[in-house]
Image (cartoon, rainbow, N blue to C red; front, side, top):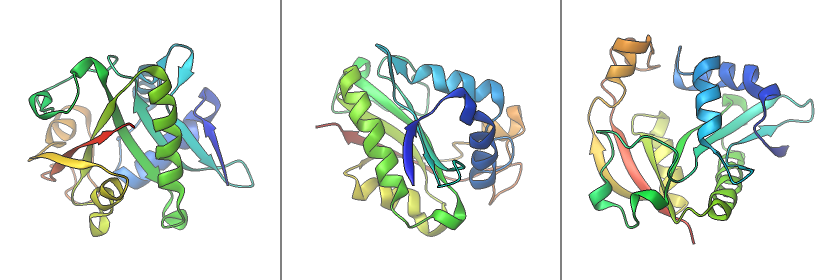
Length: 186
């Protein structure tokens, strides 16, 4: 397994994997291009892929650089340990079901953290899918040092209603919770 920075050549496989893990219409080419650009700063790329021996994407981590992402109603900046201009965003991670539990997630997170720190970020937040199988998303981020800031009800319902997102648990009317968590980058 090899960790590389996300590049346009990986987009088709990242979209397929993202939709497999997170639900239909989670990613498309336009969304991924936008997400990719938000992770570029000072000539550095904060998003990564994990490739198997056949150069197939078996995991990815999308991260946004500090100051380059929209702070919306699902964010609680008054509870963050750093100024909002110093806060990066961990958009999402996906690991192919056949490769889950093999340590890929922490390697992808570490790669993003390394670059985000070089870009000047002091911390990063994520909205973690609380209903992920076994609550694995929250457990993984907690193990990495993430701290819960707030739980948000119906975090992805608007995505269902406005973008055609289909939650793997709830279908086209998602009522899953998002755990807003902060990871201090030290």
